[in-house]
Amino acid sequence: MRSKGFDGMICSIAGVMAAIGDRWGLLILRDLVLGLSRYEHFRHSTGVTHATLSDRLKHLEANELIERRRYQTNPERFEYLLTKKGWQISAVLPVLAQIGDRANVSGASAPPLKFVNRKTDADVAWGFFDTKTGEQLGVKDLAIKEGPGADEMVRWRLSHGAHRHEP
Image 1 (cartoon, rainbow, N blue to C red):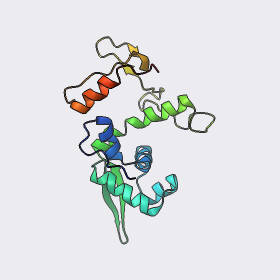
Image 2: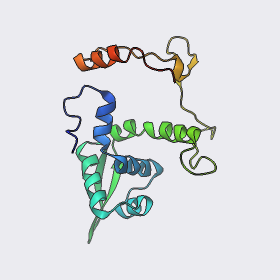
Image 3: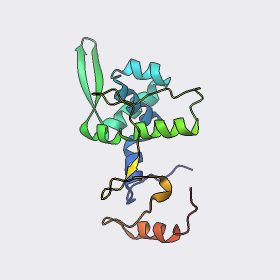
Image 4: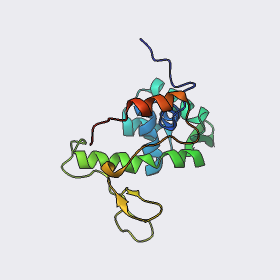
């Protein structure tokens, strides 16, 4: 049975997932952040089929995460670049990578990617910070509350998840 998608769902997480599309879209975004920009490079990096890659590139372009730019006319060839929106959404990639490293899910003996400050070359790690105090927080320190854009389903989720298990 095919899912109906996320249309009409008031959820920022669902919106990001819908814009990305699926795991292939996420890996294409990864490759774009790494500096790859050409169709054949995405194919080599991911091993995805031609049909799937073409479909995912069109999806990412339709959702304004990437733009296509011609770099050759005969034969016509294009490269793909992240848009401002694409760069914003790509911010989840280092977080996913570092969570994967902490949970040791890559199968590698050490983290496959290292994230560093471009200016200082110092390691960079994601985290949660209290905007009033600057205190670094852990996942157990977070509470989730209703935001100004919440609808009835968001309120239902929050009310029925009030007794969630601690991480």
